[in-house]
Length: 115
Length: 113
Image 1 (cartoon, rainbow over the protein chains, first blue to last red):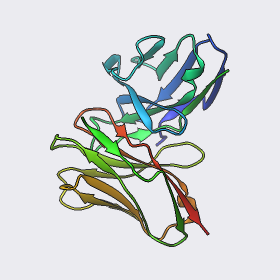
Image 2 (image 1 turned 90 degrees about the vertical axis):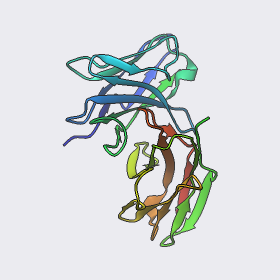
Image 3 (image 1 turned 60 degrees about the vertical axis):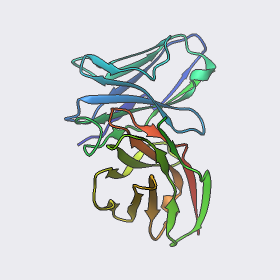
Image 4 (image 1 turned 180 degrees about the vertical axis):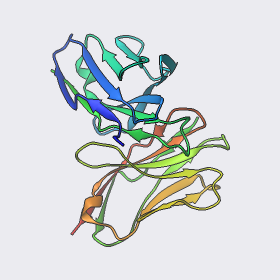
């Protein structure tokens, strides 16, 4: 049973370009979460999605960031017109139901570097 | 306000000794879940252990155990018989009854041979 799969693991973008990060949840998991980790900090919640629905995007920056989890295919975190401050590790996580005893499993992360 | 605190930015422990990593939290919500994750230098987040606020017994998973003191609002991670491979960042996280995990700032643990 494969874990949460994220790609790419490492991504370098120039300022102003777009970054697309992909996440395939664990088999049987219908809940996907995105977190961001700035250097030397803990993870910060960004967005929670279920298939075709954004449930909670309270942690998403208001501009340039968007997320989707289509009926078919992986979840995508999209960052438009990247700036240096977007450089961070972006973690996707999935769970089979609401967070709790079902627990939540993280992918290996995608490291975005903006130059 | 709900928050979670890890007061130890870094710890050095001799191999084979036990180590306790501190985590305190502040919430008025009676229902919550506590998680510990390990992040080695390779970067992935590895789930270690979970404790529900209504669980009667402290959680254990192999060498990991959780010293859960609900009245004191603390959920310290205990690693017994530490190994060199335990060197990593350790994050405490809490779920306050919604879908978000709130993370502490982490503790960098270094095991000394």
